Amino acid sequence: MADFTPVPGGGAAHNAVSGSSIDASWPCDAPVMLVMTGCARERALALLRLCDPYEKARGVAALRDAVRDGIARWHPERRFGGVGMAEMAGASDPSNVANAPKAADERDAGIPGRPALPRLVSPRELKHRAVTSVEGRAALLHALAHIEFNAINLALDALWRFEGLPAEYYDDWLQVAAEEAHHFSLLSTHLKTLGDAYDYGCFPAHDGLWEMARRTSGDWLARLALVPRTLEARGLDASPPIKAKLASAGDAAGAAILDIILRDEIGHVAIGNRWYRWGCERAGCDPIETYARLAVQYSAPRLRGPFNLAARRAAGFDDDELAALQASE
Image (cartoon, rainbow, N blue to C red; front, side):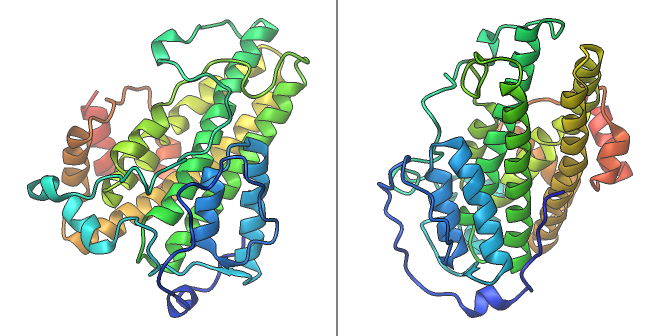
C-alpha cells in the first residue's frame, strides 16, 4: 500500500479561507507544480485538469507528500463552485431533485483532463481478444490501466468538488488517489514490456466510470453510493478471474499486480462505505433503502454475480447489504 500519513483532523478547517484563484481555463497540458503549497483542494483541481497521465500520477504523489508534511492544507470550507453540505442533503432527497445543484459548464471546464488517446467509444465497440495472445493480454492490461487512470480522476474530483467535510474525508480520498496512481504506474509500465507497440492510449476505451461521476456531480451521497460502492466494488468481483486469466497466460507479473490492486481496492471501497454511512447517519436515512432509491434515480447498472463476498465483507458491506445485493440479481 502506498505510503500515506494522514494530516491530524481539524487543522484544515481552522485555516479555511474564502475565494479561489482557480481559473476555469486552466490548460490541460500545464506542468505540475512539484511543490504543492497552499490549498490542497485547489491543487487537486489543478491535477484533475492535467491531461498527461504520467504527470498526473507524479503530481498526486507530490500532493500526498505536501499534505503529509503540512506544506498544503485542505481548507474544507473553501468553495470552488462545488457542492456544500446543505446542498448534499437536499440533492439526495427525491422531493428536491428539481433544486439539486447542476454541474456548471464554467466550473467543470477541462474536467477531467485526459490525453488525446485512448479514443473513447461505446463499450459495445470494444473488441474482445483472447489473453492467450500478446495482443489480447496487452488489451486487457490497457483496459485495467484505463480504469485506474479514471479512478485517479474520480478521487481528485471527490477532493475538490465537495466542501465542508471533515479533514479525515479529504485525507482518505487523497490516499485513494495516490494508490490509484500507483496502480496506473504499475500497469502502464508492465504494458510497455509486451512490446514497443503497447503504451497507454494504444487501444480504444470506454468512459463508463466518469459518466457516473457526471451524473452525481451535484449529489455527494449518490456519488459515494454509486461510484466506490457500486462501480469500483465491481472490481472486487472481477479481480480474481482476471488474475486467473493472466496467470494462465503465463503472465506472473501481471497476476501479481492484480493482487496489489485487489488489496488496495478493498480499502478504497471501505472508505466509500465509511463515508456513505456517515452521510446517511447525518441525513437520518436508511443506508439500504437510500442505496436502492439512488440506484434507480441515477440509472446505476444492475449488478450481476458471481460476487466476491469475502472481499466485499472485508470492504465493510454487512450481511444485510450482501443479502440485498444477491436478491437483486
